[in-house]
Figure: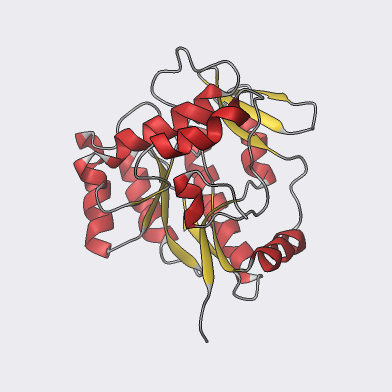
Length: 253
């Protein structure tokens, strides 16, 4: 059977993940927008804005059909797992990876998953990498453009990149809150501008040269996102047209 459009930039946020983000000891703060979205802040900058409640699986599949998407590869985007205290991060990562595998398994072949890793604990991440890549319906690993303010080419992460390279694994890198949020905390600028800049920095790290990235450069996307940032808006829907045109800043047709 031939496969058409595959959307590798699509996210899902289980209740267990959002509950963890709302915990007082999570390392994050949060608030609710007037439209009901949960906004998660890291170091005072917007890391995530997600509808509440999330649409059901049937709604996602219908949007995929409407957009002509055959398969979506789901992942947890920023802020991912890295800021959580270790006693939350390690078991939560394992549970989320299992849930994503199960969700994909119930989609009649329409969904796949990028699993998360409990970095910056490298030993725990290697253990989960070995376990999670063996789960059904897993297509690779998701990381962010920095690991809780540590650059991806930090030598501490070398064992992770070496193991991923040895396996020939696909790595999806998503932007996250920059290492410094000074000047980016107002108007959701950490998300609208900081994400793109941090992705550009990550794309130039030698350890990351073989990973899939949301964008290889930032300027074209800044041009498309600047107007919306002034209204502190973000588009995080159950599914949207995330084709190659998004990397040039052109709006979906």
